[in-house]
Length: 241
Image (tube, rainbow, N blue to C red; front, side, top):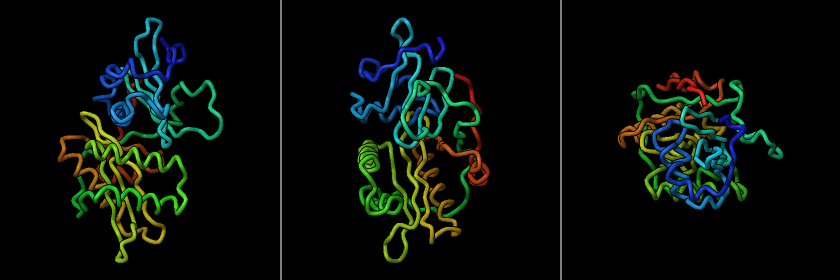
């Protein structure tokens, strides 16, 4: 069946085992796999199960506020969700030009990099750096979920701080499945750019994931592929859906 012909439901609890199987080893599946354990009842409504005419799981659509993921047996795709009211196109995968590139680590750069920071302080200090003093309810909810993922061993926070203790740059492992660790929230304070902080933090995330036996992956827009390629990442070619 085509994705457009599936029946989609937010009642994902009866399909959790199949969702976990589908997402456990996919390079597009880290966020879905982690969410299936953190929110098994899909309390935030972020996950949709696509069922065929026999009620079997054929696809998952997942939107976590950062990006939207489509996952099937054949492959996956990720895009930035469009602003405004959602339409029937919510369940259709993005056109090629709209997809974020999936990049996977091929070689670790030989640069000095920090280890993970104590998670709670790192998460809230990073949120303040990115969003200011009023991050908003959705950003705070994602931060709380991140802390839960970190407590479950599926997330980690990395920061560099200036002499006053303020975060000047950050990167995070957002989620992990059985094979891949998803890197995101790579951010540098405006007055601290051009110092190589992002390179060091991306390397830190990558080294941490590799030590756990996982392949680091990340999503990026097309204009950032060269930046990540210079830091050891190569694009994972689209496999079809």
